[in-house]
Image (cartoon, rainbow, N blue to C red; front, top):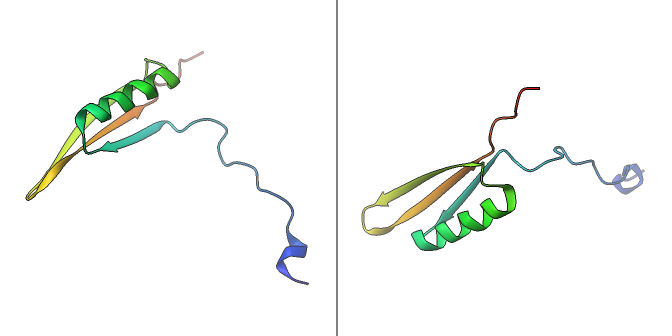
Length: 75
């Protein structure tokens, strides 16, 4: 027997929904804001956005945004 004869087909996804945190990194703050706006249009404006800037000596800064899904409502 070889490996191909033991293959049972494609595996099921390990998650059924989108991730709870989305990380976007960009070198241009205006481009990052545009990407955040597009993402919020897709997922909804109730997601939280945290913005960070990393400053490096001798290099341009890197801008990052974390988009976090709002907590689930208690039923």
